[in-house]
Length: 259
Image 1: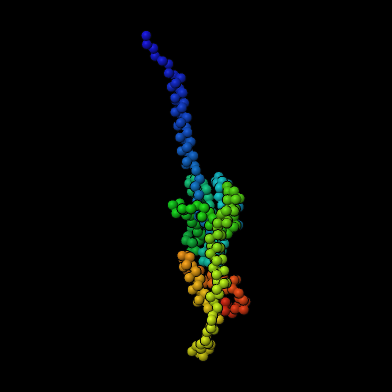
Image 2 (image 1 turned 180 degrees about the vertical axis):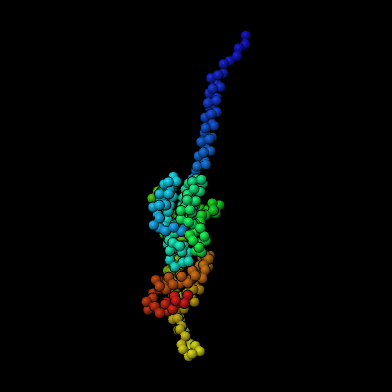
């Protein structure tokens, strides 16, 4: 005689298993949506607003960030804030980041083009960030930071890496110039007169040779350098590193004022 097996308990267990699996998939999907990503940018905001920015991070639930205060002197950028500006590393989901960014823009009236009009805010496109560590190290370069969610060792590593590349090549250049002294002339230049029979100033130092050697040094390193950087490095050497520089004050002054 045949009979029908009671599968009620089995069906119930299977249903519970399926529901558990659905909940796990839902949780993973939600977790994936809420995984924080790094966002890098800067804004023309005065340093006195630091605490307000920290409070904004707390308000939006951003638990991992770096706020880096920077100031540039003598450049035609960040004019509205007298050279002061702030770099950001923000780790949060895209929805939170958009809210934070929009609030920042509206609160500080961030618009216009950098160095042209108003206050500027810019964020790096995600697909251009190939190395997050390098971007974070660059953000930390002035060592004037407020941060949360990083360990002290992580911040120390970022600070170390932020200076390494630039300082190493500049120090190497300065040491090389001090050793070979390309600014020294073998012979002093002849005296020339202008059309009014007045002597034309001739620098006692061979500045052109110094600049050429700075350019040559960077070309040997396969490092691009522009005119203003060459002159800035030449002045750094003449004012700070050159032996007997105070004795050549007149020559350094003329070079500085005419470049």
